[in-house]
Image (cartoon, rainbow, N blue to C red; front, side):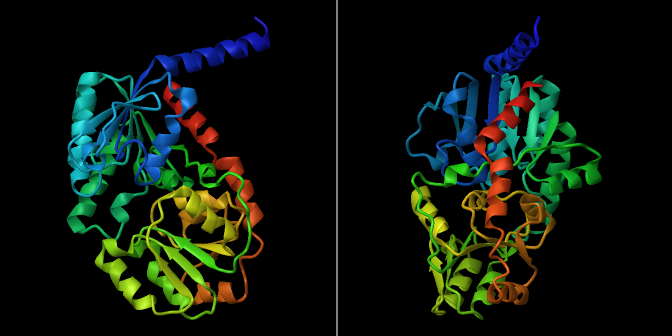
Length: 367
């Protein structure tokens, strides 16, 4: 057998296994994507070129008025609970229970909310379990003492009872190695879907920020910094969803240079803002690789990040960094952001495209 034939045969075996495997995806709101990073991930895994897979995606019936039986070739199974908040635990457990009877070859779990059920699932199931543990959810400020303990315990069970653990950031993988002595597969997210077709890039003179309005995303730090500069800021987020968001909106809307903008879900409208900003400010301090960051990196715009190991890992320490409002004001006034846009694009094209991420996931599933 010559080398060319051997390589072709090996790839046929790999993708033949994928095409014959039954794969269940658990832990997202569902399809079509209507929420966040995990949903966008699944949307791009269930791509037309892979639609021959026997894929089942579990969906929250609470989030879909129209409940199709399939989407892009994937089967959709609906569970009558919310996929987020306290109900996410029940949602994931019921999804896993349903999967027990469907007997998939591989179960891909996104997040650890329902992993309290994994010991029971593994006892009765021969399915290979692949779990993306997300961004150390138990560390987030929004959770109380007992919720944090529960999530930490769920994380521990997820690592112990999964055949493969996925970390979306090298800093998360280092944590799993140090905490549990388990090696993770590092797979991030794609961001190239965020760039619109025939996009016109410009500099309209404003800075851009985009996130869920939560304290751990350093929303107040960013707003406070811009309140002490003349630089215009457009800040997009779900301001009305929490007392914290409403408080920030009321406090900083009065500044002439700060534009508080409600969530934008239209990817084309969002692309126009991203393509015309001067630079992007990323305040996330928790989680791993944030989808909003890797999406922005594809626009070749300068990026300023809150200084933490997750953001440094995502940007290979090539972004500009700040640790407080004073530092951010200094970066803005001295334009310590003007020369990293092309570096951000180079990293994004090398690490954060959906073609790369899809291949990494399916190669992992096939092993």
